[in-house]
Amino acid sequence: MSTDTRAAPETAAPPRGPVRVERRLPRFALVGVYLAGIVLGAGLSALTGFSIAAALVYGVVLGTLGVYLVTRAVQGRRKATDRLVTSLVTTAFGIAMIPLISLVWTVLDKGLARFDGDFFTMSMFRVVGEGGGAYHAIIGTLVITALATVIAVPIGLMTAIYLVEYGSGRLKRAITFFVDVMTGIPSIVAGLFAFALFTLIFGNDARLGVMGAVALAVLMIPVVVRSCEEVLKLVPNEYREASYALGVPKWRTVVKVVLPTAMAGLGTGVTLSVARVVGETAPLLITVGLITGTNLNPFDGRMATLPVFAFYQLTQPGTATQAFIDRAWTAALLLIILVMALNVVARLISRFFAPKTGR
Amino acid sequence: MAKRIEVSDLSIYYNNFLAVEGVNISIEPRSITAIIGPSGCGKSTFLRTLNRMHEVIPGGRVEGKVVMDGQDLYGEDVDPVDVRRQIGMVFQRPNPFPTMSIYGNVAAGIRLNNTKMKKSDLDDLVERSLKGANLWNEVKDRLDRPGAGLSGGQQQRLCIARAIAIEPDVLLMDEPASALDPISTLAIEDLMHELKERFTIVIVTHNMQQAARVSESTGFFNLNGIGQPGRLIEFNSTEKIFGNPDVKATEDYISGRFG
Ligand SMILES: Nc1ncnc2c1ncn2[C@@H]1O[C@H](COP(=O)(O)OP(=O)(O)OP(=O)(O)O)[C@@H](O)[C@H]1O
Ligand SMILES: [Mg+2]
Image (cartoon, rainbow over all chains, first blue to last red; front, side, top):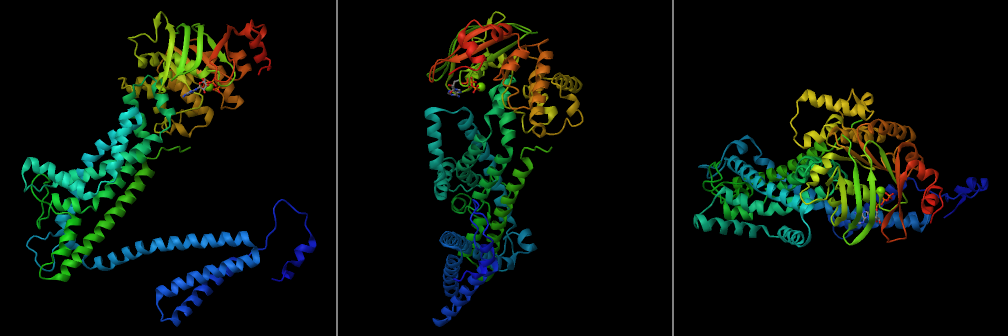
């Protein structure tokens, strides 16, 4: 390329500093090149029969190539490689976002049809066609998840406390190992475990909310242990020592100094572990079953839950197929909203409980 | 009630690593004893054995005796928690509890131990301790603000207030002023002068002038080489240590000739 645009600064001949002065490309030039690449790609795909996917693929490749070549010609190799890698990483990110966005889009598209008052206030009791709702399943999911949390959090938190504050040697390594193994347990196995456990006591027909809660708790415990363990490890030793030096026994130090200091992280971890299990289907399918009416008592008979509800709406539609499919999608939408809400709650917890310096 | 501490033949280990060997020292009540010596010679390690904080570290153990007013602190039936209630400690880095207010930090010794105390008594105690630590005037209007929001020097004085609020007999200070500016350092030195009326104070310091200014007695620790245990080389009145020490190594260290 010609260099006469740079003639003026060069004649001034500034003393060579430690920083090399570079020619720059304005941002719009790069964007322009990239867009040109995309347009070119679209044109290219039109040759082979236009499709958005092909246009995008051709366009992104051409755009990236264009930016690389132009940068290389003007700014040299290092900068060009930098840009190339940047565009590759960004493209990868874009590809990763496609499933997420299209998933949310599909669920919204199909789920909004029945996202109405009835859905939240009516059960499926004596509903065989249109109408009805998932009130019973929403309540069931809330009750069973809450119960699972009540079971899993004390066990998980105490295990984490043991691992961080008390454990050492072989027992600690063994527990860590088993927690790791538990993390990988397929959810159906957790369901079968709870099923086997309860049918031992109550016979083969036992279907109880609490069975589902136990199955979910089995899935939750390793997640709770892991996240709480990480958070407790982050509590600086200085605070423990400060407490010991005041003549505070160890257990009180754990309860009154370590746990409050870690509260934000613990709350976040627990909330995210709830989000992890709230949409589990398989274990609930075999332990809790499904009913059409509302059952609030997890110790008495089947209950409905959102994932199982969605499953049966899809697989066993009654007379009005479309109505059943709509309800399934709305249940799915609701599950996604629940998980998102739990994530927001987790963030709020970590903000709210974070130790304040507040000068 | 200040107390005398007699240490005899104390050896301190981290697992199998002998960090400090054969210390004999006698710490007088109502006085300030300074511990000086090069980095890594075991000053902090020694200090932490005096209130049984050493064994908090996994693998930490000691041999020998630490006797306070006739009672062996490492005796069979002695509860380390009780020892720590009588021998308070201020750490090298200020470490106020981040979840507690200024008030809560000073009251921590009482509250964490669930000691029953009337609100008004506790208020008095907090005020007294903060005054004792020379911090009251700076914080009296914001007692409910987080303790971590104070400046470094203020935080260190808050930690001193926290330590004296449990009314210990002995106060151990591990380089309490090493992270502070000269003004805060002076404030803490003045404070030590006041505190020694009531407490026995042991202070570790790298600052020779500080040791000379504040202490009555000084112990000099040293190492023979890397991997060797630290030893108490000389223990004498501060005047003697800084004027005319018995041991050549002490003189070398104090005048900056060593290694
Ligand atoms: N937690 C620990 N585990 C194992 N060894 C340790 C531990 N803490 C200290 N040591 C070792 O014990 C020796 C004495 O350390 P100590 O911290 O008492 O030195 P110090 O005199 O306080 O030094 P400084 O002036 O730098 O604070 C050193 O060799 C150190 O490596
Ligand atoms: Mg030290």
